[in-house]
Amino acid sequence: MEDIDATVLKAEAELTWNSEGVWDYIVALRDTVSDLETRVQQVQANVRRIDDIMMTWVLKPIFERREGKKDTLLNLEDKAERLKKVYTAMEQDGAKIRGMVDENKRLLKVPDDFKHWDRYLLFLDHVITRGLVDGVSCSLFYLLDNCETRVNQFPLLEARLELQEPYLIIRPSPEELRSLVETLVAEVLHICDLVPRLATHSHASYLPDVEKDEEITHLRETLVGRFEAAASQVAEHRDQFLQHQSLWRDRRADVLERFLTSEEDGKQPGLPKFKQQIDKYEQLHAELENIDTMVVFDKWLRLDVRPFKHGLLENTKKWAQMYKQHLIAQVTDSLTELDGFIKTTEVGVAQDLNNGDYDILVSIMAHLVRVRDRTHATDAMFEPLKAIIALVQQYGDDLPETMHLKLQELPEQWESLKKQCDLIRQHVAPLKANEVSVIRKKCVKFETRQNIYREKFKKYSFFNYDCELPYWRLERVNVRVTRLEEEMHMLQESAMLFEVGISEFKHMKSCRKELRMLKQLWDHICLVQACINHWKTTPWREVDVENMDIECKKFAKDIRGERFRELL
Image (cartoon, rainbow, N blue to C red; front, side, top):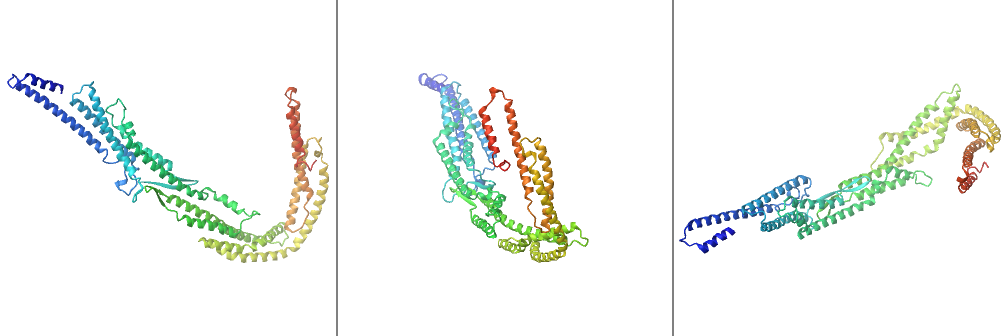
């Protein structure tokens, strides 16, 4: 421009239409101006192309609903692929812009040290910054617009409430939702890093300027706030179900065990309490079926409760089924055990006693005693079992057909077995009377032997502190007492089988009790002696008199304790 201005000034001052070479001057000036006009037009065209490139940044948001429909969720499945395409396009656009700016510099023949060129780059930077602000705003506003709480708003995102025992979780969790919005905003803003900055003396990237823009700041804060509000509502909705957490956190086996021993005497509760527990879970199951399977927060965040509801209902069924299965197992086990007992006993009492075999007599008597011991309980078991079956059938459960057949047949078989046992009892009565006489004689003899041994036991030397080899003597006496106890147990078993009343053999029990206490006492004596012997080897300067006094008092207290009081 300065050259053209100088040339024009020369014409104004020196040339006329009659001047020599004026036509050549006009042609040269025209060519120079025409060339400048052409280059300026090319520069302007490049600027318009830059504007056209920036217009593409606002044509479509980076993140959209699936298939672009208004009633679908935000498409995040192919987010990585979509971001790759967008980022690649932005890098290409940045390269194109850089190329056109370099071309403008060449067209305008700008020297490297021309200061006005920096001002031109700052102007272009401002234009590109606005373009990036518009591009980021396009994506953020799309997200924000779809998070409005207006009527006819369709959910944008969906979370799932799931029961993963022992935890109740949300996918994505409230924390992940908050992280998601920050990630989406950061991924949108990342496009500002992909366009090379023209004027690099301030920032190396457009991102700082875009982040400081009031519009972007407002959009970002509003969007994050809406996500946080919705995430908090989701967490509150989840927490309301924690009142039922015992359904998935408690171990059913432990709860059942506590229930079965909840009566004062530790016995199993009655049928009404079983019914109460089953009804509680059946009623709870009916209430939980009314849980909404889909809940929408602020019109745009949808919570799918179906996975949790399914798991919760399944757990509730299992709790009710636990009590029903216990009752069913109780009936099944009772009938199966009685059936096996009847069959075994029928065979056992039918053994041939013609030769008067003692072992066979003992076997038969054992069967008769077992029948006698369970007569009252077995007579009373059938009606409660029928009541259990009736209760279980109220809830749509039932026992196998074979169990129903057993329940019909076993009462008759049980009565038949009792009659058979009565006949066998009469048949073995003479042999039983003989054996009763033998057992009583043995008991008298054993009573005499235990009295004699008791007096001998009291005189053993391990009752004295100056006893030598106390453990060896205790072991020998223990062997003798054990043999006598085995003999005593055999007499007691025989007496039980043949229904003979015998004494408790208290002297033998006293010997065993005192033998145990003597072993503990001698252990304590050895401990005390070992401590004292250790103290004797301690140098005078290292003697801890206070500690020794404490230990001695402790030894004395232990000796006077409850364990050894009967021996001292």
